[in-house]
Length: 289
Length: 159
Image 1 (tube, each protein chain N blue to C red):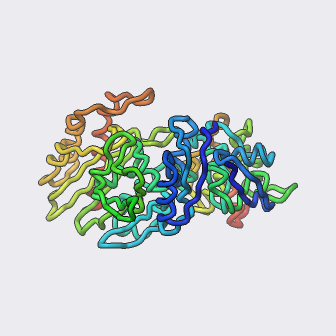
Image 2: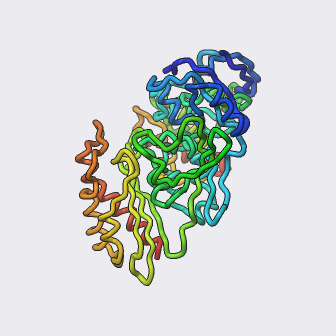
Image 3: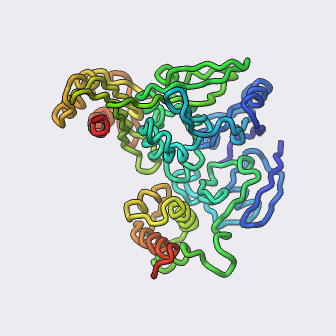
């Protein structure tokens, strides 16, 4: 399949990419291309130009920063999945990245591209909201701003990124002592997108769950918190029975429109979400202890 | 607007002016005539278009030629010297890891990536590692055996 025609520009710095964005109204930013190129090939979009961010060194890499981890927007899923810094500080992000697509997709797909595309069936948005990540955004005038992950994802394929803005990095906090987080996914067997992705972050003190954050994606247009599940877990001893009882409340928390397609109807997804929430919670509980 | 690109493909330097929307797989097949790389699903799910970009596996149907300007590309034609087989190709032959053969170039290059990341994979790791490559003939059993044999050969073990 051929995309509609577009001009191609290659930026060597964020500043140059911003200039190119300003000079080319209707241009789109090209990261690894694993979200954008399929969209163009299906002719769901027809930008006048692509601005390739692939050669911008300042956008690549994972490093410890501000008590957490800074992940450059052009860091690939493969690099995230194998990052020792992330494994130590916030392993759930690496765990989710390792489940994206397949080996070849992870070699070229990037966190910035995935997050800016905001596909409901992507893995990283769910996890980034669960751990309280922060998006670092470069504005047109050279100013930078930050947006909490929970505020960044605004709708299906819609984010807080404005015209002329470039997502430059994602910052994730280090999980503190006593906190465990895990991601459980029902992958579509062909596309390996998340039919359901469940992220749990639990803080355990003296054997009891002090704080629980449960976020699901895939089933919803944007990462969605399950407050009844979290409330049922908080104060519990995270026994198998407690987890099962809490996860049973997942369907009740899914009140809005749910995703559905020929592979998995919205009714099915609502029904199965609890099972994946239970898996994520059990794994997170084991890590928190 | 044509974009000048300069790539090394299977060890040979190639300079062309390409349409920005030209996918790497079409550059390889239609411009260079290297038809070993296949187009099947064209949606980065099936892996038939897998090639190595600077030694790392990529799906060439989801990559612009312009994006990999300057890179070294290896296709199935260039994995071994002419007239010889790479140990992975030989293992697919010996273990009948193919039937119609359409998925095989991608399978072989995905196996190359799997063994690069994990030279001694378990059966489960092989099945997981090749999840991005679809075969509609074999049922995968002989593909897994082929990868096991390739790993053994490449690690210097007896066959």
